Length: 260
Ligand SMILES: O=P(O)(O)OC[C@H]1O[C@H](O[C@H]2O[C@H](CO)[C@@H](O)[C@H](O)[C@H]2O)[C@H](O)[C@@H](O)[C@@H]1O
Image 1 (cartoon, rainbow, N blue to C red):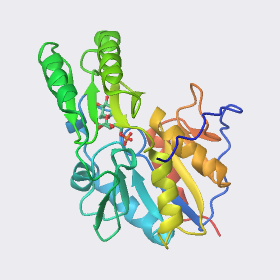
Image 2 (image 1 turned 60 degrees about the horizontal axis):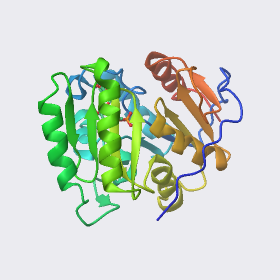
Image 3 (image 1 turned 120 degrees about the vertical axis):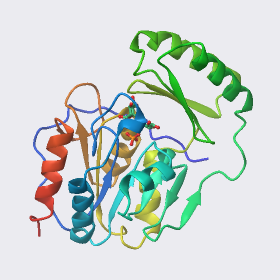
């Protein structure tokens, strides 16, 4: 089973961004990076401007642009249609090629049945919460009831203990997720760089805002790439930062007209 890279936070990220180059491979987180965080996952919409920008970036970087998200591929495809990029969903547990061919990392059903039942009961008993059943992971959202953050964490810690350490507990932005160990955004990025011709030999650049993006930052750092965190606060392995989704979009737009 692939291991998570060891966390390393050597120095704070810099406001100095790398000089753009056309030989980059660009990896883009979705929520909190390309689109602003909303009260509910279903509230997110992708503007025509962003879809056009992704198409321009795809041309600029010769097809080496991928979306790497915790969302399932079904959601990403629906939100981004008709854009057809390589994408990794559920933190790399599933992925698709540019032509839509799909792959999954785990073939057997995850042993989540009792946890799934407990989660449904827990959410029904606590107004403001909702959950996502992604098949191989379970996700609990508390943005609608932030006062329940601690209650949710304790509930998910108990579920994690029952599942055992073949699963990891991820603490994200108003979200908790139980995910099979060893699969993360870093493995998704490494797979694209190693196995997809359009990405091979390019310098990786990853932009992301949340804890699950840290695995990808470490992978691109180890490959002499550039890691860009959205938001300057908190510990991160990223080497530089942009302050907001708007700054990300402005910088991405600039990449379509610059760089050797
Ligand atoms: O890796 P990402 O693309 O950043 O996906 C991470 C999770 O994003 C979604 O949840 C987050 O965005 C929601 C909409 O703005 C927000 O309501 C929620 O609080 C955030 O955690 C998505 O729903 C999850 O499935 C992803 O894992």
